[in-house]
Length: 331
Image (cartoon, rainbow, N blue to C red):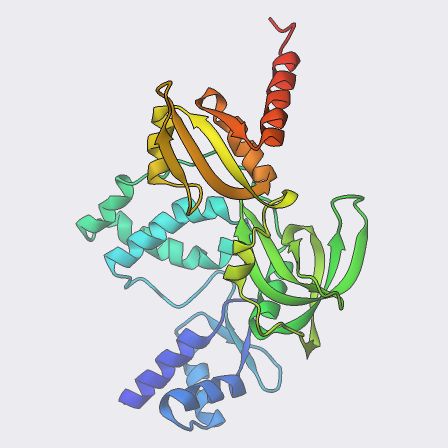
């Protein structure tokens, strides 16, 4: 009886959400790693019995494929209060950061967690009424991503298979079809990016998934770089719009209030903040020479003045003058 419970519980946990499916022979191989050899006939019998109680369904393929029916998942009504709280907070804030397709599969968990929280089963669930997250900038409009495209991209990354995509370039709006060797997924500012090599090019590129009109997993392995590290790739500022390339030694004159914030959250590992004779603070740091740097500097307003490098100081001065001129003549 214990083996039966373990086997059936493992089957339920292993069945994917609609529209993904898992074949009975795949379930058999997975069970063999956990509890030894189990016959396909036993697995099929278990699945047929479980389908009478749980919202799972099989197709007519050979071997048969199984999935949870659309909108259903393994019953999680027994979530611990702390786990329910995690899903409450994820629903409140994660859905604002990811496209709807990325969180659609979590909806059954969100529903179950909400049911637990509404019963006030534990004081810990009331934390959701005591926690708020304030964004550093206004929320951007979440880009719509085709759920089937996203599923194919994620599966290609996971299984390391070659992916063929129909891509709409932002420059001319035209659509091109080409293969991609997928390396990784990165989410930034509510946008999901695919990191990989296009065709047989040597350089690694990024592709915004919401611009992919169609995606198909091909029956051949992707050619990956064994030395690729997503963390190293991100540390090389690959997701910043580089201006001149490399880094700059930045020197700013900043007010004491901003200095206190930057002491708590430095902008670089080598950041130094010292006192200036006029009562302000002097900041020196090595940072990427990027468009993001310029946007950040302009956002600081009068709290920061660029002293060095001279070219960047002149660029900021000219930008501020153009901004001032754009307001001339307004009431």
